[in-house]
Length: 483
Ligand SMILES: [Zn+2]
Image (tube, rainbow, N blue to C red):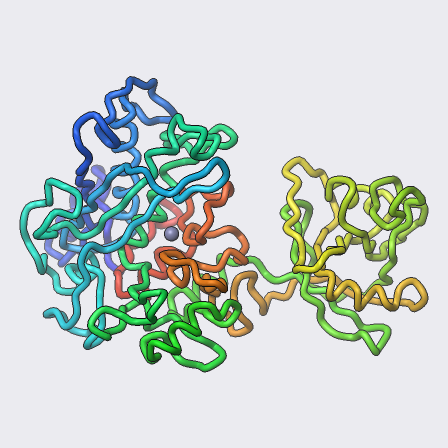
């Protein structure tokens, strides 16, 4: 990769060298505000500056956030052709509890355009096609209105305008600060904008979810890396029937692009596992989900006893009261329910446990366990009812010995080959399936379908640039650590 950042002022002799070299520039991404006067991005409601956003009206603050997100993506990517994003605030589906926050996609896709090293008969989003061609394939002025022909803009993005000041549409409002510090319930527009813009840059599927058809029967570039591991076929190699089946084959649909797969090894957490060695009849590796609090398990297999807790009161195995037993380094096995996860783990820790396994007592998978203020010093994980019932069948009569550990060979959110899982729920979610990373990934990623409060896109866009790199985008050089 070549230099993509301007050389500092103190190094003028270097800038000469840069000037005669064929420097790849960061790509310029412009926001085309197509909202009518007085609404959306032109809303004149006076507001106070917030979180580094100096805007004095609602519309100004919204536009500032979109420009800032466009600038960040522009700095992460290389390209010679400006990108125009047509942006609007519109009412989108919303209720007091759920909302479509935004939607985006390429306005135009192109195939067999004049560029070397592109896949033949394959749709590319306009913004990417332009960079690969090296010039604007459809030059012209930006459109003055939303989706108005002749579609010279590259990307269209909608944000839900009903979120602000309307409690029939989520209790909170948009947050327009740049510091990722929304009040509880508010939603940082910056993170949502970064997500939506990435869809417009190419993280999108053109497959019609009800028919399995693609435009003119040609696949899109995104399909080239979308793989059904059951049939070992990529989406661009499938017919409509196979596509309909694949789009709901959760757990078997992955992204096998090389840049993303390489980056996932650095970005995704290692999988926690409970390895049982005794009794022999139960020996094996049991999947568990790590809590969002407390330390991680180690990578070594240290086998210790497993013990069902007893707190003497009510459900004696719920760990809601101080435990009767001394656990002396053993793994505490605890039922869910009746009190916070952190309290159960605290009681296990106080009794001397080396780790806590919280058991889902209801059908379904392992539990998502969060406790932001926990001071826990032992690892905690959750196990599904199915697997815990198997182990419970041996407790307390038999000595169960197990090791709770991290497996560096398995990534949370990737399949056994290290390929990142794509979102493929059954039934299909139109506009959402396949075009997102599966929410099982840990840490939470920008391109998951549901907004996570843990995102901080201004500082971390995790796997997203690498997904774009697999599509064909060139990434701008990352700043040197010593800069
Ligand atoms: Zn999305």
